[in-house]
Length: 369
Image 1 (cartoon, helix red, strand yellow):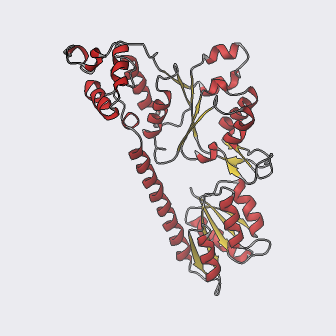
Image 2 (cartoon, helix red, strand yellow):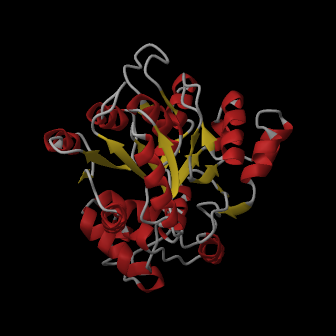
Image 3 (cartoon, one colour):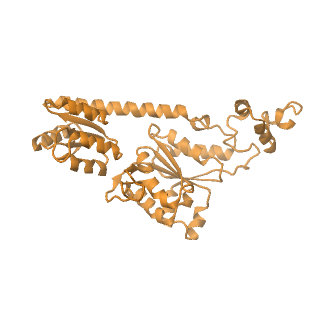
């Protein structure tokens, strides 16, 4: 059920809109001025905001500007009385989706909201299709030869449609992020964002802000509000790569997010609802890290719901399973595309060649290097 926030200083209009939209199937929350409406809109996740242009404390134009600057992503529809069209158009330039001239008929309100929903659905669908076109062949459809990788992909297919937390383990370079992207693209969340972060690559002092975001003035250099990766992945998927490197202090905060589906930006007093599927990846033995006291046991069991274990790179003679997708034809195309002699040398060093066991050693570049 879609959530709508109504912001208007007229009690009668707030009440009538609340009844109308509730009957139309929406969950409605109301505030009486722009300032309180802004606080509410940033504290909770809304799908749509209906906001009057002229209000005490904070007008609609200022509301839209501040809401967008502070990371608000709900569709905003401004309402204007006679003579307020210029202000409404200015609000649309600041990021509002549409405006409703007062007085309006009940069916006009519902129709405008339905159109806004449809527009947003189409926008997300187009974004998802563009994202799928942008990814490489290995992320659109994985083709593997090793039995261990086939088992891993079969598990990917089974867990993709659910929102279960997945732990992906394996050596560095075995394709953990590729598997994570495959889960995302095969899931109902494929049209939303896939966001990844390497927990080992960001200093501890910045990692909390990167994950959860911050508000203006939270620390030196925080000149404005910033949404964290959990908010950026809202509705989509967040990959926490090298989760075994996460500092113990942040492990407790991550556990709370997984339990409550709420985050708190650095320096903020309010929590925000998030809906991001979490995938975790690590090259470490987390059970050993738990025994050593470097990883929280409760967090381990929270992320250890479904485990996809990738085989080592030298698991089979065919070489790295994700690099040898589609067999000899793809390998040859890869060599031709890159046009780098070092690729052929790398194939020889790995004990491979483009034509597997059928090559003519007198003509094969891999054997001539």
